[in-house]
Image (cartoon, rainbow over all chains, first blue to last red; front, top):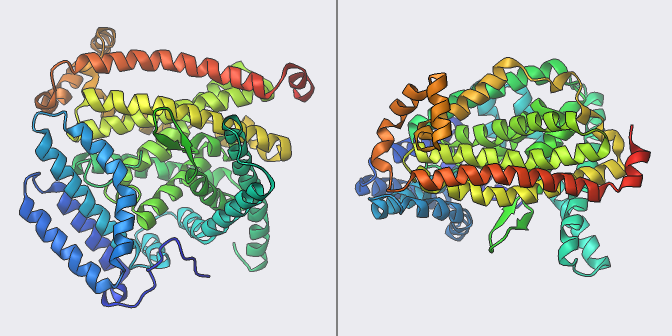
Amino acid sequence: MRHNFLDRYSRLDSPIHRLPATAKLLGTLGLVITIVTVPMTCWACYAIAGLLLGIVAVLSRVPPSFILRRLLLLEPFVLGVSILSLLRPDGLVLFAALITKSTLCLLAMILLSNTTPFARILDLLRNIGMPAIIVTLLALMYRYLFVLIDEAERMHRARMSRTYEPRKGHWWKATATVISQLFIRSSERAERIYAAMLSRGWK
Amino acid sequence: MHIPDGFIDTKIALTSAVISIAGVTMAVRKVRASVPPRAIPMMGLSAAFVFAAQMLNFPVAAGTSGHLLGAVLSAVLLGPYAAVLVMTAVLVVQSLLFADGGLLALGANLFNLALVAPLVGYWIYRLVRRLFQGHRGMLASAAFAAWCSTVVAAVSCAGQLAWSGTAPWGAVFPAMTSVHMLIGLGEGLITALVLAAIARVRPDLLTGSDGGPSSRFSVPVALAIVLGLAIFVSPFASSWPDGLDMAARAIGFDHRATTFAGPMADYQIPGVGSPAAATALAAGIGTIVAFLLALLLAKILVPDGKAESTKT
């Protein structure tokens, strides 16, 4: 089953998408480590990394507007922490360097997740020795994440169509009810999944 | 609180990755030994559940907003080690699929949110639970533990950021702690309300919350947590109040604390000691206030008459 809001472009066809997942994950990790360790004021290094990521982005055919939106979504925390660095003596340079560094790393991660299907990443994690139980959890989580989010949206819609906008004091209680219902439904679904897994020979 | 790449240096990233791998490996072993296979789909679904629940933002004072962490909630519902694995899965997916939390910083994020938050939170939950019996005691302990888990994870995060030289301890510690003392109130409130609602509809799902074989802590896991917290926060011990300083000297930690603080000396701004000390004091008072609020909340959620009838 395909789900559209997670890693929407991870199944496109492009030279980047066809690269083996191992190469992409190692490449991303290498690039991130390099960006983090180069001296703060090595602006040329940032330019090279940015150029490299730009080429990958163009080759991957992931829409630039999507990448930009993702970046903007993730930028607030980056700004929040960077602002604290202004309190240091050499704050302004550090502030600019930190923002550049983390934005480049974010870009690398966004490109990785949108050019590599999650199943390939899971294969890779299993091969490098991640415990089987965690890989199983990740696979189950990836499979049912959008089911649960759909379910939460349905509950929200149902409530909105039956009640008025909750007042301030009721907001917490309404939210908690939604969350608890979500957990109860998840646990019931988990029981059905377990029965289905057993009946298909899972051990 | 998800640290992106670029904010912590390679030294901190590797240190926390090693500690996190050790801690998660321990938790895997514990879960394998104590959790029946039928609980595995439940854990996978719980990971998806925590992820979905984290998308709900709640308002905090002064225009900021926080979201649920869910570490104590899942520790109470599933047991502490299962919660470690659930939070690990959540963080890995957030990092690899959404770029929410960096790749190199994954170890640090795992340490703060998948080890410290559920384990310290659950430990506090068990401690307080021993003092207060019944349904009301459960809700009060969970609310207080949820508050503590948020604050302790924030302090650990502040330690990592400060030690990386990203921001001065004197600024990042008060900022992170005070914001998360507020966010923690939301975390505690939601945790207690959700547990109360589940207890109303499906009390059988809460049977695991009172312990069982998997709830006892093993020495290695506890050591990994204490060691990690000590590493990330101890470099700043020298700027803490005199009382702590003297305690450190008495135990013999003083020497190590000053050698750690060496490289940090350049980064300190004038008056660093006082905001950090003031925050430590405020955090202490905040803990007492949060504890009283948790008791009050439980009293509101479970009125006197009802407490007697549902007491088991």
